[in-house]
Image 1: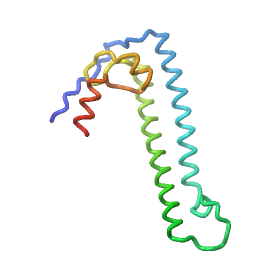
Image 2: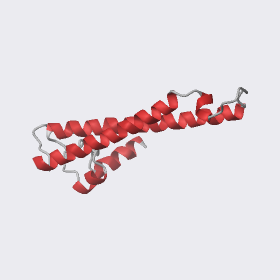
Image 3: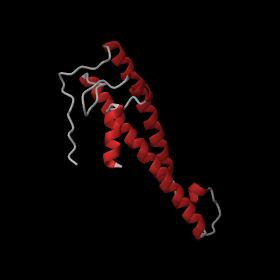
Length: 140
């Protein structure tokens, strides 16, 4: 199936007023800062500790293989969370770019206005609900 994606033209304008866009931008920046802080903490806690440090074991005895497997699982889980946070950061950066270009709130696929309710819940949304459902069907 060929993806017939119609990019929003820069001539199209956001359904938001300049004041609303400034408010949205401030919220996106704040959300981005929170996620970045969480990302750095997760990644730092995961990557900067040895297995022994992470477990809190101060003894000189060797780890049991089951303990090592649990620690490895915990690390992989934490890195998975960090990856999700990284993807959210990219989505927020993209939303900020759309705000700066004046096309925030317009569907990236079809160009129609994305409902303000959707953007309130998911400010990084770049597609209207219809196009998002179609995208998820084609990739899922």
